[in-house]
Length: 209
Image 1 (tube, rainbow, N blue to C red):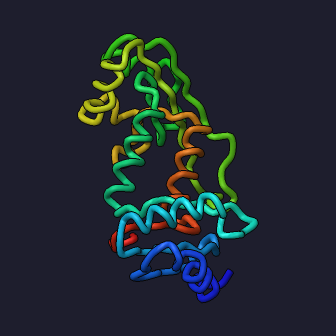
Image 2 (image 1 turned 180 degrees about the vertical axis):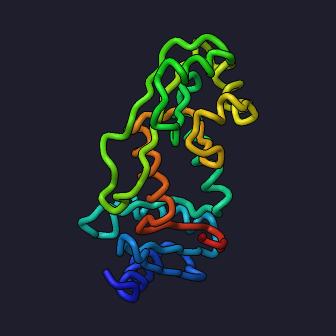
């Protein structure tokens, strides 16, 4: 659906729910899907329109995603809160490690921060075709017995010379909490939906991006 068509659809379907003060329709160039911001004069009118879209889907075959518009700050805050609920607070993920490192070498260094219950050090399965000259580096998972030790390692390891020497370059230092791939995919889907959702409603005008 083109932007002009979507604008007319929103006007015709939602105009009866209240006074629309503005409609902004744009298309994301990456996914080629439109998204819109609709502003009503009164919050009650926006609520009626919100419920109407949820019930009717505006007569469209494809499912319409609708949510209250948020500022970038609000979106990022909620995404961070969601991410915090998904991460494993005892398991750390490291990447850009030297290709010559063994599992024992990595675990020995991190044992300084507390009892390590398990760990893995691996080489990526393949190198992207578009980076044929890329020097491969290893990645690792380190699981501590308790989350306090893992947090200590996460925060303070960047100041530890022994830890820095594990990386192919100190500038490529990277340690974070591990998030399972399926959960990370879910997070990415939510992030994409919030930024490029086909339809979004708001009860007061705000900067959309």
